[in-house]
Image (cartoon, rainbow over all chains, first blue to last red; front, top):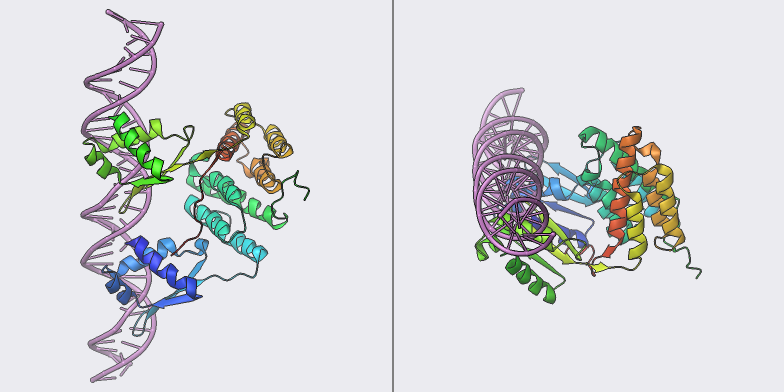
Length: 158
Length: 158
DNA sequence: TGATTGTTTGACTATTTTTGACTATTAATT
DNA sequence: AATTAATAGTCAAAAATAGTCAAACAATCA
């Protein structure tokens, strides 16, 4: 169900910059409880995944999902670096890497390397420490990408 | 039993690049306990044998087995993985990365990302712990470089 | 045959999703 | 202004999955 609602909203977002819904209507459409919509939004439309969400209650209330717009790769990297902050969970970190891959800022191999580096199992097991270590690592990686020319093999003298 | 389930999954994988199952369904199909499926997967669908496994718990959960292609450069990577062992200093780790770059096994960007991840300043400050963390990270990265998934569609949110 | 290795089982744990009761906010009506 | 209606948000319990681990059992090896 979550996946279906997510797919529906993303499809609309392929055409548009943002989408505005009435929570109860979508819940009815998919025959689920209204709070399911909140669950979808909280788990699938996070800032790490590149979305902003606004809402209003009361009569004429709505939920609006907005795709975060960036100018270029550099802007995206800077935005992500801000989002990372000085602590980040495994899940959020992986969302960030995934987003960079989807936006063609990093290659699949680079994404894999970075994803591996975000994995919980590599760290100490102390949640607070790990989230700090992870944010240091990811942030430094992204800072590096800012100053790096895109992909070139050393022997590729083309 | 293990052999039968293995054969079943491999047969499906002859037709497809990947297979997605619901653990309890397969267990029912073969009249065994669900954890038997984990055993099959852990013993027969390892990365060394050319398979990648992903899963999700909870509602709509699944286990997905993906065929991967073993890449060239295996020997070099395997050698490096051995060298790394379960503890490695910053200096040695950086040498390993440098060597991979010089041998054209990784790109400059990849090298930079990996070098960043080896840097002492990112870790806890406890030498023994850091060397262990670093080796875990570098080793896992190299293991990942050995395999490649077949044409996974990217960002297809339709 | 005794030791070793591989398989099966199930109790317990971990994760993710679904649900609904209760709360908070805003707009409309009195 | 106060009250009521119409929204959306929160939170925790329940349900629906998958994972782990060790004990029991089976097969194979020396």
